[in-house]
Structure formats: structure tokens, C-alpha cells
Image (cartoon, rainbow, N blue to C red; front, side, top):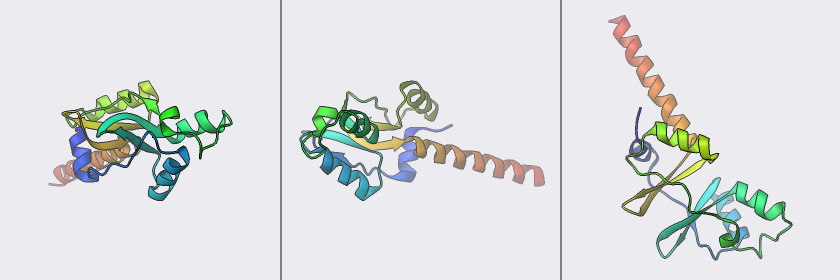
Length: 142
């Protein structure tokens, strides 16, 4: 199969981030404006957490908190699981499955260089399978 770097080459390295001191409401606006399911939380250039729709649903809505008054730092998932560009697609799938997560920040030498989602993995795997099928069909036909 492939590696995280292969997904980033296709997808790009754009990462949407939020400050831990932003309100949850501001983070939700960022999610909506960019059609995202998560934001990395960065402080002083360092990844310190991840904010997801799941965090909002479970830690704000169900707890009766106000999204305009609650800070991202109060509900983010701290110490997120991350991968490197050299992590294999298989390991990413195992991590996402075993940890029940849908987003993995990508760090290279402790620098945030990307974010991959379960959707990115699925697209990559489908494209790879299509490529293999095309090559097999071409091989059989020739």
C-alpha cells in the first residue's frame, strides 16, 4: 500500500487550526466555513490538541454548556494521536479503528505538516485499487 506522504502529495498540506483560547463558537464557525469535521489546536506553533464535532456534541451540547462562553481548551482532545509522513496507510487504518478516531495530525520533526481523515484514506485506497485493476486488465488484454 502507500504512506501518509502519498496522501499529502495528492491532498496538499493545508491544515486548519484554532487557538485553545478561541471560543467553541468560533471553532464551529471555522468548521462550517471550511466544511471540516475537525481542527487542530495549536499554541505557540505546537500541536496541543484536536477539536472535533464529537467534542462539541459530547462536551458542550450534552453538558448544557454555552458554545460562545466555552473555550476550545476546555473541551479539546489533548495529546492527539498523530502520524508522520512515513507512516503506512495500514497503520493509519489500525490507529483510527482501534482509537475510534477519524482524523490524524501529521507531524514531521515535531512540525505540523498536514492532517488526514478517514475519507482521505478511503479515497487513496479506492484509487490504488482502481490503478491495480486497470494494470491487470491491460496485462490480460495484451
